View 1 (cartoon, rainbow, N blue to C red):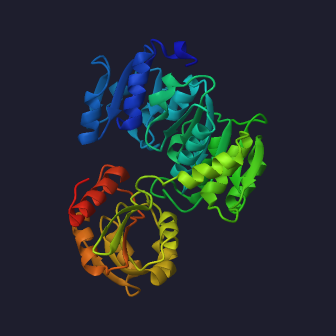
View 2 (view 1 turned 180 degrees about the vertical axis):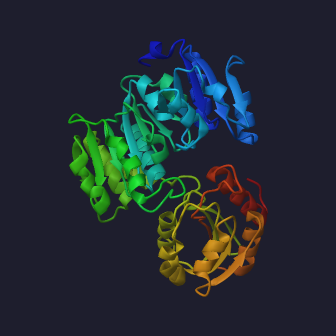
Length: 422
């Protein structure tokens, strides 16, 4: 690591005690910082993570935020789930305490080469593909970020010649300062997170921060087929490389090919990775066939575009399970595709009434109070040769801790129908 001495003896408070908050707390403690963590949620995740901090010297408050917990610190580090209007942010600004994100913290310590990927859809797949391509090319690499394992969790293990394939969300980019990836990739942009951003322009502004600090020694990879992304080249000082969907490849693969070309990796290596790639968990993941009905776990779908992509990649009649916490989605944009592809929908969660209002009259609709009930109802509706697609289009937080827990729950219910255990 570099810049380790900078954090020694500094008083640093972390807002948020999920994965990235826990990783930050333990990293900073190892660096000799005086660490405290605040989270206004008191749930199984915060309780479990509070038990996993490295030392009792790390002060923790859960279930509330208090101003006294923020006062007197040299730095506030934010987990991505903490919004700008959260009390720790407001108090830190009033007290002139600098604020940075978890990826900014890890970046300041990182001596490796960072390839950062953002976009509304496809981030996890592209980040995973790039990580696998780097490994196949014989390079030591880490696949980190919003994909699951926080950047700060592994930064102490990263050496100068290592590579990091880093998935970054708009939330993580909000509070960067010096973050400067060698290669930045912007995949696409569609209506999303309007429960957090006032407009699509605000959402795009957060995404654009990925190349804020780049210069002519860096690379910016943009989706040429997406007009709102293509024009970002005018705002960048980096060398711009466009990708567009090539014949025989999907857009995610085309983006990964572009990154590989910058790194000088042989195309044959990349194509072999594509051939061996089995996809990522919770994204169009075939779980089982039960009575001739195929069950597909697409729990990672938290946007309408992701569900559109899923439906376009299926050629059988679909029973769709959808719903969850509202994100400001416009469900009417998926309605023409639903008419063509979906035979019936089982709706769950807080958004079920809004989705029903849009889909009503177009297809058969039912509702369920739980995911278990929804899966069992879908099985009674689907016929052999058809598929049940669990593609929520919504966040998970009304019923689950995260999309991973949601997807695993779906799989376990299906395994129960199939008569075997996970």
